[in-house]
Image (tube, rainbow, N blue to C red; front, side, top):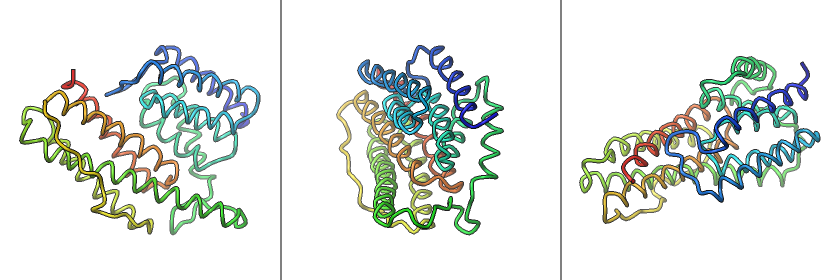
Length: 273
């Protein structure tokens, strides 16, 4: 089956999957406003129309925007990967197929996605030493510099969000011992160390002590609500970082931190209501 045809078939399945959950949030800690949900649905529809018209670049942008507004609707990873695959953007396709495999455990096309992921793992040219996807040598130095700056900023944002949240949990755990602040503070500390180590391997400068300090809220429910918002902030920052760093080591680190943030968001959602 050709890449374009494959993308169209996968898109059809994704549309059915999205419809089956009513286009609502799916997953732990999912709380989005009606406006966000409506906008996400609009982006999905526009992305679908662009795919059918063969405008895969527009479809990719629409699906990515929709996923940002409904970060727990993981079927979007399916559409993003399909659009990127149709564009022969193996970096993005590889990353989002992997996310789909990890985040959507039950899906009628799961085996087909796994097979395509394995194909990309072999066909996407990798530099054996850096494990990074090679780029054509003449893409324009200015464009590469902008991409480099965006990538560095994204990794710093992710690290800062994790460290800021860890600090908040450390400050909250004694005041609210009945809530899981201590448990998730330990996990955030672990994730922060892994991201910092990843940054070192990538040659990215990350300031270990440059992060926002948050005040502990005055009530237990407010503390849980703040924690849930922080976890969603982490998820968004990690998604952005994964757009730039899609090597296997980077994916393992960033996706692992993302899964932990989803679990924590679910835990704090439970104590915030």
